[in-house]
Amino acid sequence: MPALPALAMLAATWLAADARTRLVDAVVAAGLLGMALMVGAFFLKQQIDDSWKTAKMAVTQYQLLNTDKRPLLLMGDLPYSASFYSQGKAKAVKDNAELATRVAQERLFVALNPDQVQALTPELRIRLQLEATSGAYSLYSSILN
Image 1 (cartoon, rainbow, N blue to C red):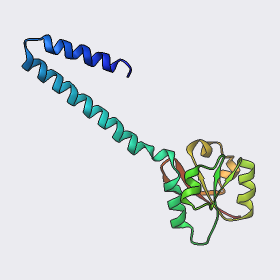
Image 2 (image 1 turned 90 degrees about the vertical axis):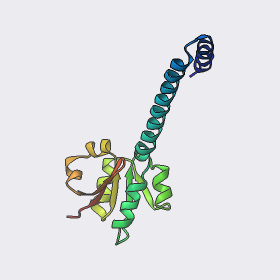
Image 3 (image 1 turned 45 degrees about the vertical axis):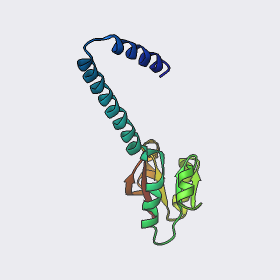
């Protein structure tokens, strides 16, 4: 990025000195158009791929499925987006042990990212039923024995 102004000045000097301006103009226009398309595609992809940063879709699914007022838990640090979209109703559990205790006590929903799902103990994994997957989180409901 810091080199772009210097490269622009070098390109302007080169373009002003070249006698074949039509060919040079066409090459420069094609290069600028190509670069603009690549930058636009990059930002569009970033816009689409940013869904992994938020718990909005998991909370939305929770709100649709939560007909009997069960709590929503997320493991680890509670993302701000989970608090915001759930209007403060989402709560955090720190680890598998705390989650297992809560799952044994009550019916609830749990939103987990793929790494957290992999870290679940087999006993805990069989107590959770997948309800929805969206963005970076999968929404599970607990199954009581």
